[in-house]
Length: 254
Image (cartoon, rainbow, N blue to C red; front, top):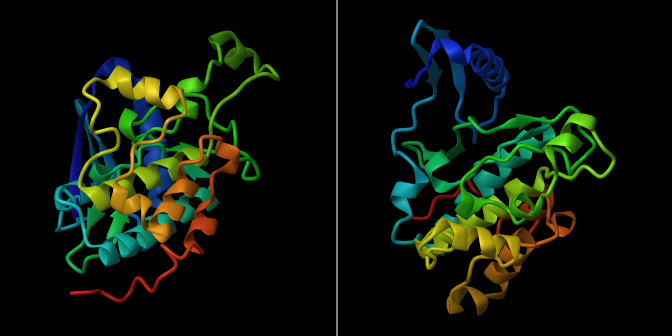
């Protein structure tokens, strides 16, 4: 079992109650590719979250030099299974990146760290579900940069209100796959965060290597993840049927 310690102060009582409620939701999740949450303890100056221990650490640690294609496809299958489960539970993760993906001793991939997750009230909607801005810039979808919703519109629930939904997780999955293949995070060639924001706001996906472009299977999969229009982006279920991810993930290549 692993424990995550979060320092809290008295003026954070509202946020604390919200976090406790969220952890209770995640404690009820049960999927082999999600890190299990066992419970939470609230103390005077700290919050203790108890979760499943993944002995091999994070995906960020193991993919620094890039991974073999067979391994990437297998991990992608696991990741899509996890995200698909969350989406069917009306949960958007919102911060999918290698640092939040963990590996077990048996080489099973598990998505964790639900700190940015959001539970959707209406299970039938996909686009414009969420308003607040979270996540890590290099793995964010373009709609997070182009959303111009004002505070007044949020308060009034105006008909012109825009937002984002499950499709942001699909873009992030594409970013993770790209990083597994290359060993480099998306937009690695840009030195400032504002440059990344500009690229995203302009609808420019992260660059692909010539090897990726020349491989129809890989290139085709990533293009489905990196559709600028979230309405055209593939769903987890659709990507699980794609040749790239539609594999028997129980087989481990050595």
